Amino acid sequence: MKISELPGDEDSGLTCRTYVIQNETHTLGNALKCIVDRYEDVQFCGYTLPHPAESKIHFRIQTHETPALEVLKRGLKDLQRLCDHTLNLFEREVKEFNKT
Amino acid sequence: MPKLDENPRVFLEEFRVKNAAEDYGLADDKWDFRKFKERFRIVIVKMDNLEMEFDLIGIQPAFANAFRRIMLSEVPSMAIEKVMIKNNTSIIQDEILAHRLGLIPLKADPRLFEYRPEGATEGTEFDTLEFSLKVKCTLNKTQTKDSFRPEDLYENHSVYSSQMKWLSIGNQGSVHKDNDVGPVHGDILISKMRPGHELDLNLVAIKGIGRDHAKFSPVATATYRLLPEITLTQEVNGGDATLLQSCFSPGVIGIDSNGCAFVKDARYDSCSRNVYRYDSIKNSVILSRIRDHFIFNVESVGAMAPHVIFTESIKILRDKCKTILDELSNF
Image (cartoon, rainbow over all chains, first blue to last red; front, top):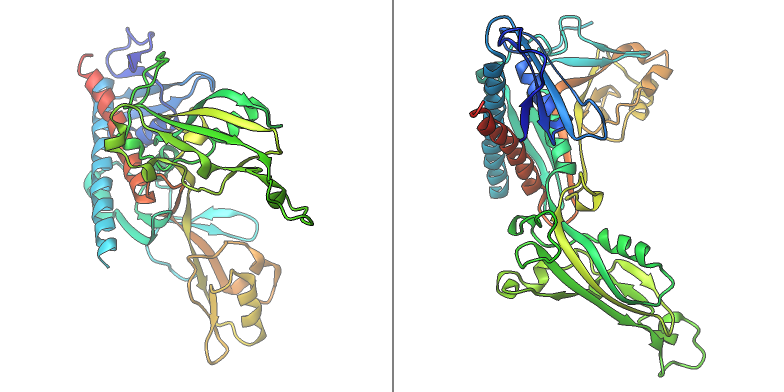
């Protein structure tokens, strides 16, 4: 399993969760945080690498109303969209550059 | 201070680095893909098979940094991982020799190979490249009498990476060509030997990522910096103009026919703050950098062209999101 939920938020509704993502580092953590933190309804979003020798991150989301899971999914989708757009644009520029 | 245009800036002042007064550090903007798409631009400045310089304009530092980090440590490449030593009578120890061999960049395209499954002891044609290195140093029988140069006295006294021979496994011979898999550089010195020294090695190369070992990193360097900007606030001429010119990297400040200094090209400035040493000119210049204009420099080790490495890094970030999203659908 790459992603799981950290126990402790069972009683606090769906709006706050900490997700554990295995085999990820600041690379994904910071990029994802950068997007999720900028959503309208998000109260808090942060991530941490609990220990440098363990390859996992804790990704915390707290919102006012929207379920945390939904926000996480939206964040990942947006990041994916950003990658797709960057990829298309970059490949177009490379083609353009090679023409001249 | 004159009003500059709307780019977010960071100002390099004499004793501090300061954001513009109305700039809250990009942090308070709400995420808006449409807005991002409108502003985001990519400009390729320089590109060949080994090096590339390009600009990402209008992107958050977190994404620029993610791409950089992925290029360094998560884009795969092939490198020698195991060395079977049948004979090594040279003075270089087995483990040092194996380490040296591991660092030799290989031309093989990692996209044509798979990762070796965890725990597998035997390689297959899809995940392994094998080379042999068999060299023996001998006395040169035909040496000229008076010469004392090692290249005249001995045969094979230097072992170079070009002496590695590719051994194709299974069907590899029809998929890859000899020229496409070997070392990028043939003149890498592996060891020096004297008569009686011998190397007989089998080298096994696999696909890996830089996070595991730096030898798997496909780039020599992958860096970014922010675009420098120099603004002159008042006329600088005469002796001060030459002084100003000497404060910056060559080619940054020009002097026109009236002896008046102007900013020719701030892009390649090293952003030193030497101007602030001179009272006569320090108040006539504003040093700043554009905070969302990233100048990337990617230098390939030789297996993949730099633009391919960057493309791969984007794909890797995208696939990370996809894997997690797929798993989340079961939540």
